[in-house]
Length: 167
Image (tube, rainbow, N blue to C red; front, side):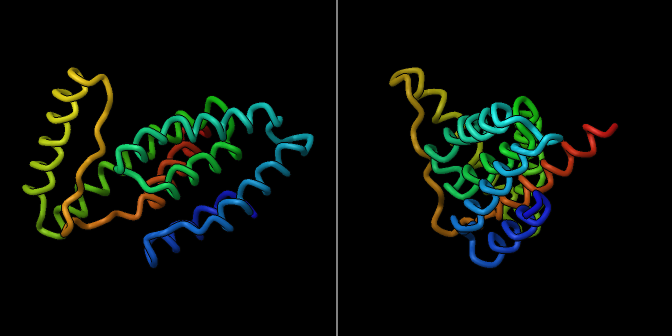
């Protein structure tokens, strides 16, 4: 399984069902691990550091309930393919793509004002409560909010990284 096939299947599943199957992620991990054993691939240390960094970068967003567990595991799986420190660049481009997609989705659904107000309120709440309690609080998501398939943002971020790396 190639990285492109993994991302395509993850995006397809996330759009259709709102989930990224664990069996797809395990297959991706195994494929990435196999590639790290090949002579011209990443070495297993870079692949392992990519996996751990991918988990570490997006895990706080899962704990805040901003991202789903599948999104975190998908970025970690991408980390096995791209390694350390490239996964940081993928995460950065994915976050940019996620922001643009979220704004586009808010505009498309006519909820731009509501979305901006919710983001403002969430950020303000985090800063005021984190200062007093020294920890982040989970984000309360409105019941009627539209969920964005974040696998698409990770796929775009990975493609952007590939284009940037070749430039």
